[in-house]
Length: 161
Ligand SMILES: [Zn+2]
Image 1 (spheres, rainbow, N blue to C red):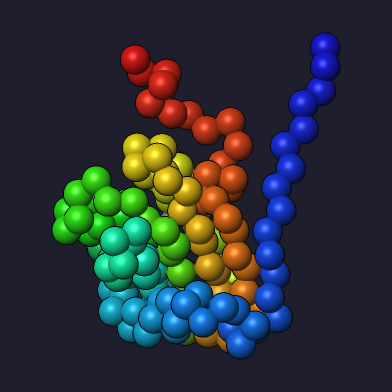
Image 2: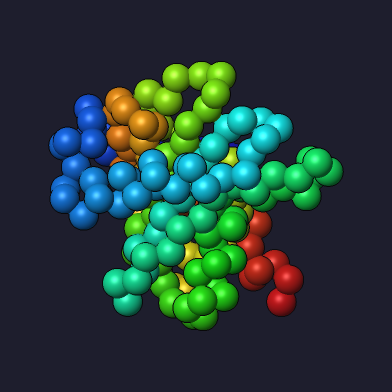
């Protein structure tokens, strides 16, 4: 037996003001896009905005449904939009923010497990890391250099060939 270790590091900024200009702009866009969420059930409004390698900007927000499992997270709405509008185009950075009627939005949230799986595969198939900029409407901001770092030992398409 031998032990293997997984480690990952990420950057923590005290506020949006410490970010490089482009990341700050993208996070502000994500904050704005929270207003486009359709979240009448959870009242948890998430906005995700991607900057693509071609310089284009694409936004996504969570879209819920009375049949709860039919709802989609902002991240997967965003990935589907990117694939539809700019097929085979890599994503450079995604900023994610949120507003909740029931809680204060003063700390970063990170993608759920299902979205981590989708982000990992998007990275793999476009052969490009996706940086994540995670922050609430205020407070600390996390910058993660590669979204697949959030999903060690991922199940990938390699298993299906
Ligand atoms: Zn999700």
